[in-house]
Image 1 (cartoon, one colour):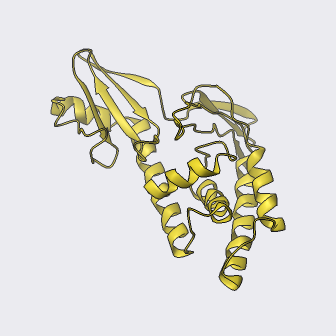
Image 2: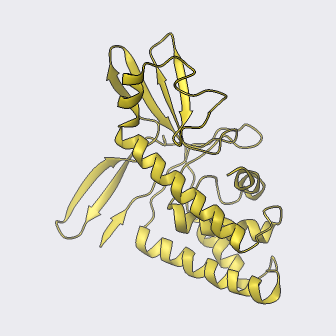
Length: 225
């Protein structure tokens, strides 16, 4: 079984306080625990129509989420994968914030979602031109790579990056998480439902966006995705 050290993502909060986060969690154990707790809470909500803020499982989920410490480390720091079958640690990039050389003076960087743009997006630039686009091809910050004047060949190189493809998979999982929240009828303006939604997000997407205590910020973000 592989244990993956997941670095938490930190976004600019709704009060524009930038946080960048990293923390290690044991993926199999932690994700399973979040999944079990959220499923129990979803069942209670389906049965009773609500989950009280003093519900024991809701408090336990909040406690488990709070153990994921937010620090000032870079989101682009590497991830350590411990492969028990080989007893080796493999270092791989997490996939965001790393600068890539595309040649001919062009650089690229895949960025995490932000409070103003709820999708992962890519920046391509050469010092004079700065293009940006969401990884699903939609506008980011009002731009696409094409509208910014990025040459097609450079665009193709940028979209061929492993980080770009990783971000596309993350976006697919973010949409799956949101769909699960919708199917449960969660009210993303209600604290108890937001906490359940955070548990769903971590279970499906595999990392935490904001500090778990930033419930209002989470709610605002989840309404955007």
